[in-house]
Image (cartoon, rainbow, N blue to C red; front, side):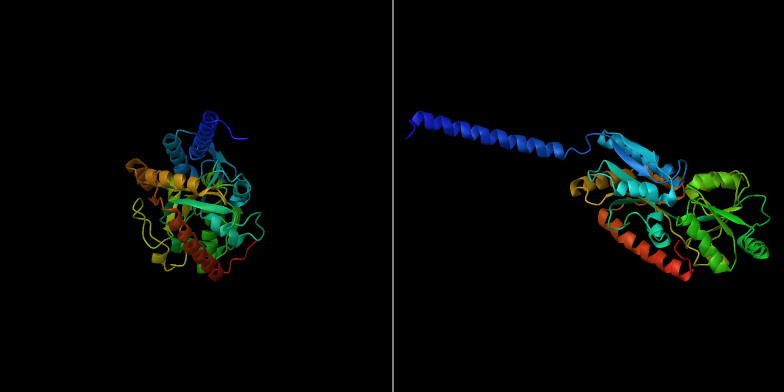
Length: 333
């Protein structure tokens, strides 16, 4: 039965109105979906409070909070050389509301720990590299009768295993650096792993361990006030903050080089548009004068890389440490 013209026209108008309403609703929904973040973002730091990631990570998250007008919460979850916190992120929802802020141990853990509860490459999405170090410092307790690397090596060789070096955990760069030195200089020290660099530092200051290989950002002030003595620096060049501290290469050990870095990741599968928003904001923050100054004053180099740049860096860094660990004959545990 044919509808009257007026009723047919009315039906068409209602249909058009319904389509328009549905379209507007879909557009509004899409806009809401792209408004990330709309609530607090938790950022896991898999180390104890007070370590190198806190020095740069906390001010970075504060600026992310201001930029997105949502809290970016710093959540320290130490344990198992940083793998407990990393595993938590790997198994979190892939929505951009749980992120990982970590160090180069993300790569070295894969090489030095036999059974990880996650795949460092497959289970994480790179967001951006934040910093790059000049290399790890070798520092000793002031009571140790060693003023430079040559006298330290002689002392260590005279008492194999008697000197203790602390690290932020097995597989951490602070551990790997000590292993590299022992392999290169043919000496033996006893490794004491902790749940974070700050805990190892406390025992160094207390004289419970004699040696540590921390980052400049962590140990710089303690060198200046004489609470620890700097012996040598990993890396090809001296650090601008401590121009009087020679490199291992200057003593004839160029292979003792462990470039450290800090970076942010998300669980693999996090929406690309959210990764892009995070990356763009991080790059903007790192380019700001005050953030660059803060990073440089901590003895680090500001990076703020794109996702592609960071991804390529990860591969180069992994290859570097894979070769270094093999050369030093360090076995996975």
